[in-house]
Length: 340
Image (cartoon, rainbow, N blue to C red):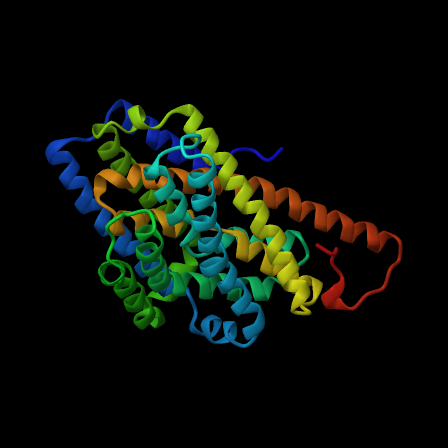
């Protein structure tokens, strides 16, 4: 069994600390300014790290890249809204309230992950180059698409979010630093790529501080009086159902489009992921501070479920490939993978 992701363990510790010792008053205001600075630097380094040729290469296989974007920014929101309408119509009092539903729907609007999508595609013997391109495009597009979709989708549950206002806020706090990193890439890029571990630690440390600050505000507002253990279990089951649906539908989509097996694997893993690293900062920009804690709960649960499930799936694909190799089967390089 896959052990608990160390990053997620750090976030759980941040939640526990916020529940016991939430920051209040002046310290809360100071931390909110610190969070803004940390997020700015995080996206600046992301821009400096991403090489321009990766962006150019990513648009070449438009059919695969378009399929990943379709799964990420169309299939997920449609499933989220559909499940919300279904459960509210059939089981009006059986599931959690609208605050957690807003978190589930926000999750559906987020871009794909980068590191885990690439790593899992590699384990499964899929098209790693395509996965790198797809994850890159998804994250760049998410800077504009996530706030737009959030405003449209959460309007469905009566939340007051202006899509245009959210896009402007995210552009100011996330896109501008990213663009500046791209502009200064010639000078900053080599430094960032040379110190990958330090930058990764800085990025994840920023998210931990954001989560602590968000949950401090949520604890002061009484989050644990509104969210029970049963509610968290219900969210986990709903997250699992969405992940299973997207994994199955993305597999069918790849086959229907005539993609190679290696491309189908890349589509399945990139199209089913949701980025915790992008989601938490975006939530802190889009939503009021007191709401961020409860909004990101479904995302944090989904993060661990997707890692566990997709790791098992990737190992299964890899094992089937090795079994085929042992039997002496000869296939073309692109199709030397197990059929998803």
